[in-house]
Length: 472
Image (cartoon, rainbow, N blue to C red; front, side):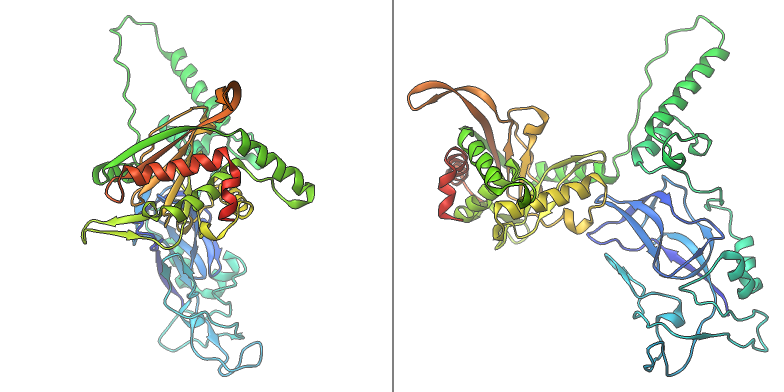
């Protein structure tokens, strides 16, 4: 017989305890298939689509877009019809038993949760006879492949229809149609100005609401307010104070940076380096590769390769501190993080096993992860587990910085902009391409001599790329 199942916000892994509803992908009354994405949520790590492990009719949704929910809170309820497999046979002619089809669940896993049942093979379905004790007619529709809401509810009987009609009102978003918004920044701007996105007409493709549409609505609201307000001499009002919640990516960054400053006794050293030869070597590499060799080798990829070579010589900086055990834990592999600025804020994707890659391979992985970061598609696993971070703040047009260590790592190399400067070269004053390098390190894992040796080796490789030939 049909039953109404509650789907709760699953454990998304990596220690995440909450998520913000960005966009609902289904409405009350819609028919969903097993493992169909039903809601898009934003965590402190990434934007993810959450699939529902049940197939049937959506009877209720909990939480409006922009609402933050803890793990385990109800997301929606689904009315699931009964499905009975043909005993001893599946579509391929093999034998079958019980499984996911009987429970209405998929058994699939999203990061850190599963439905607890194995993935079942496709089964031939036959209607379930109506029992004498039940007034609910059996359905001949599989929960994993519904057709449409009317057909489903007609087959499932009064229980499903009643569940949809009597969906609880408290905390439930009524079916008003999805809001044509993709960007979380647009939603945030609308919330800050108290605008209802459903009342805004989008000028983007297929009615998509753009940032300019929200800004136009804000100006129109201000003009309307000014037009109806009579000029009255009043005391000058104090400027309003804006309060921005520290949550999502911004909140995660704030927590990590605060913990780093609280726990790590850091120190910074820096050096200027002549990058003229490095830039010439990069140009030669890309020219020799030709147009069919794939993407160009970037400066960041070369600096990343230099970092892995330096960490092989100074493994103290590829470590972490276990404060409880009072031990320094030296790590075998180098998982290189790099700072990337996105619309959602600063994120640090991780290039796994960077010590096993050459400059071209590192560059390709950096390009792939950067694209995913800008699209908001990075997974929590791609944003964690780093052992050393490379921070190229030169892209912002600045020369130097004292970066905060990405806890629980032991060091971070900062790279400023590469620009023409006066430089003494071979005993004469010349214009050279100069870059400032800075190393912030955990003073518990090493002393200044080790940190200085690491930074000097990096600078030598920048000034004379041939030094890297020993480790290639």
